[in-house]
Length: 72
Image 1 (cartoon, rainbow, N blue to C red):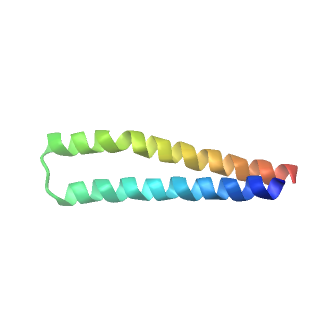
Image 2 (tube, one colour):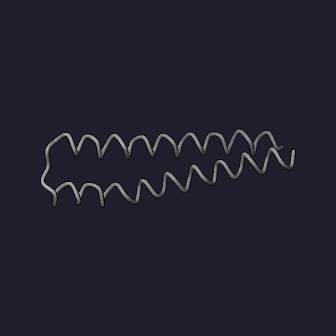
């Protein structure tokens, strides 16, 4: 039972990590494109909710891993 929680949490953490990497790559691509300050700011503001959601997903996954290890 607790193995499911551990592996599910690991999967959530990896999904969150993949989302964070996508955010980083998206902003790096926008910076290299030579956009103006306003366009870059708009891009970063568009990526920010995805960044926070990915971070939240990763944290929830790590909490599930810790919970599964401590209870199992």
